[in-house]
Each structure stands twice: as structure tokens, then as C-alpha cells.
Image (cartoon, rainbow, N blue to C red; front, side, top):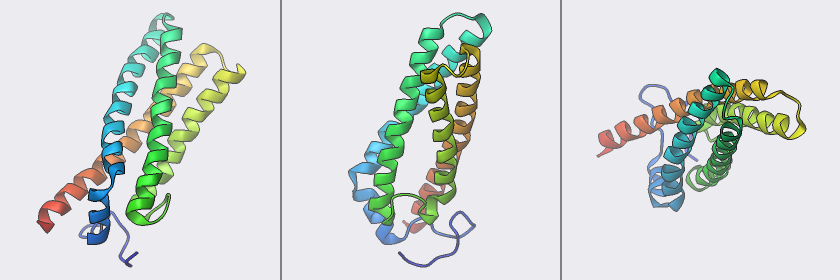
Length: 162
């Protein structure tokens, strides 16, 4: 991998030409492009169910299933994202271009996994589980914002290169 200043700073390219070519050639870019909006849709639907339960006390089952679906998408996008990173940057995680996004992804995964653990062990009451899910969702929104920012940077840099 070419030496370059820290990614994300003004004027620094997100991808080398070789990385951009690998990014554009791999099926994993399409997989990420499909999974990301599906995960966001699962998040949005689940958020409604979770908030409904917290406001009304109704719909615990639907909220729980929706959180499990959202978490499944999260795990799928993390596994396929690490494959994408390996193909594009030559390492499974923490490539310089996406280092902080990957770091924060682990916070998101830790919170979702804590929810699963608490659900499976009965360590928390339903309302506590829903609050934990909301914390996981707040972290997810921050992380999604990080990735959207990088997507925008990549598009802008691609336009400049063209």
C-alpha cells in the first residue's frame, strides 16, 4: 500500500488508483451498496417499533424481532465489509482510509451484541432492553454518518480525478 498522509484530511485521496480499480471491480462493493440501505430500512422500521413499545408498552414481540433483524443486517454488513476492505486495501479491518469508521463500528457491534446477550440471558427487563437498543441505534446513526461522509468524499474525489 502506498504511503500517504492520514486519510480524511483535506486534499488527501481516499483511494489510490489501484485501490479505486479494485473497489470498482469487486462484487463486494455491490454487496455493501445493497446491504447498507437494507440495514437502514431495518433500523428505521425497528426504531418505530422500539419507540412504540417504550411509549405504549405494546408490541414488545415486534420490537424484539425487529431488533434481531437489524442486528442480523449489522453482522452481515460487518463481515462483508471486512471482506471488501481486504480486497480493496489488502487488510481485513482498520485500513487507514476507514480506520475510525471501523473503530466506531466495533462500538456499534458491541452495543448490539450486549443487547443480544441481555435478551438471551434475561439480564435486563424489556424496557431496559429497548433503551439498550436505542443506544445501539444512536451509535449506528453516528457510524452510518461516518460512512456516508466517506462515500461523499470518494464521489467528490472521483469527479476531480475524472
